[in-house]
Length: 378
Image 1 (cartoon, rainbow, N blue to C red):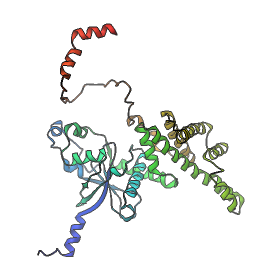
Image 2: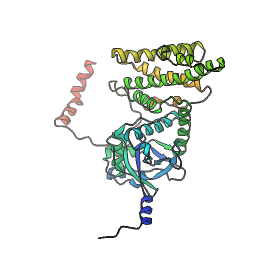
Image 3: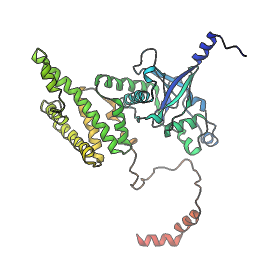
Image 4: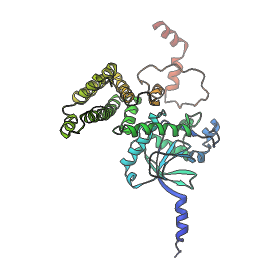
């Protein structure tokens, strides 16, 4: 029977392979840093699956996300985020919520990210603190994509995303995270994961999810403003805090969201235009909740605009990069609209396998007699 290794050897091995939870930035990005060479891949490497898969596992750096020291979130070259399996994160919903708070911090700080759910979690380990290896991949599309490119097994159709990908510098992630978490720490009632899900809903053209989550965020911010601008100031002016008066002002049955918003407008904390925008979102949300009416695209965007106005009331003069983002660069296009013209010439071609009879049909459609008949009809 083989002897077990000494305790000091076990500890040394344990330090070389440290367990972690993982998720990934979505949409896919390559992370750049000053100490790393630029990411590079050729079309030949895409086609024969010979890209540098080890580099995708490489640890770029770590970012402070408010965990107790010395723990941070580790960032990998392919946009992976890894967290230690601390006791309070060792449940899937807790890990998902914390990751979404981090992603919301990046979003508020000006780096577009989308929310994850439980199928967006990987479990893995940091190897020699140089690489992060996924051991068990989540079933979300993003996780499956990263699993395939990290194993150098992605098909050319998938791996083409490695060619000229979106990229972001680690220093920009650090700045965005610091800015975004600063906002979340200041507006303590604001749930970053719900803001992230709301913006993701808007980007995915899921107006119900977008409006529902963003309206919850609106109510959270209104509650925060109400506490600071109404309840605390009333108590300060009264001299002696009145429990009865605080309870009355805190009664959400009397002071509904609509009543609070009207009061904030009357006090000049919220503009009339902002109140109208938020009221439009509130009506659409109520129609969805009580009547089952599908909200419009405009109502979801109105909710996002209302959040901008409310945060500006709390932090006047402070720039929130989220609202400078061009979300149209990330929003899913309407699938029923005619395809837009693509500028320029294609760089690469991929043969599309034909279905039985398809090649013959295409020849007929592009034959001269058919084209003439089409022109006559038009």
